[in-house]
Image 1 (spheres, rainbow, N blue to C red):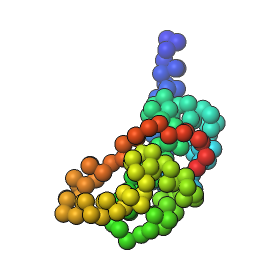
Image 2 (image 1 turned 135 degrees about the horizontal axis):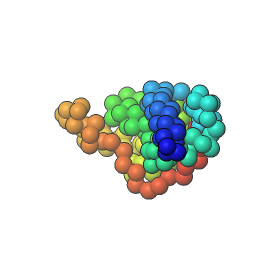
Image 3 (image 1 turned 180 degrees about the horizontal axis):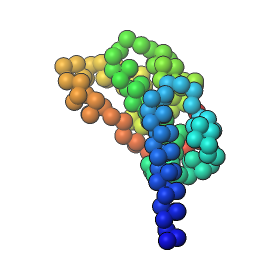
Image 4 (image 1 turned 120 degrees about the vertical axis):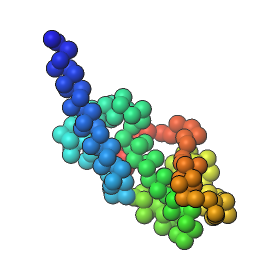
Length: 147
C-alpha cells in the first residue's frame, strides 16, 4: 500500500493547483505573483511552478499573462480604450512587457490588433467572436516568474 499516500498527496496537490488557477482566472487584473500565489496555498514558489507546469503545461506566470491577454483582446475589440488603458486595466504594470507578450501570443502588436479588430468583428455574434479571437501562442514566450 505504498502507492496510497502518494496518490492522496497528488490529489491534494491537484486541488491546490485548481484553487490557484481559479484565483488567477478571477483576480487576473490584481497584482499577482508566483510567491503570493504559493504563499496563499502554503507552498514554495518553486514547488508551485513545477507542479503547475506539470499539471497545466505552462508556468503560473505564463497562465496569468494568457488570461490578461485574453481580456485585453476583448477590451481592444471594443475600441473605446487606448492600448495603455487596456494594459493597466488587465493588471499589467509595464506597457513594454504587455506589448511584447501580446505580440507573442496574438501575432501582432496590440495597436494593430485593435485597428484590425474594430474593422473585422462587427456583426459577428459574441459567442463566435470569443472562439475565433482566442489567443494562440505563436512562439514560446520567456517564462519569467515576475508578475
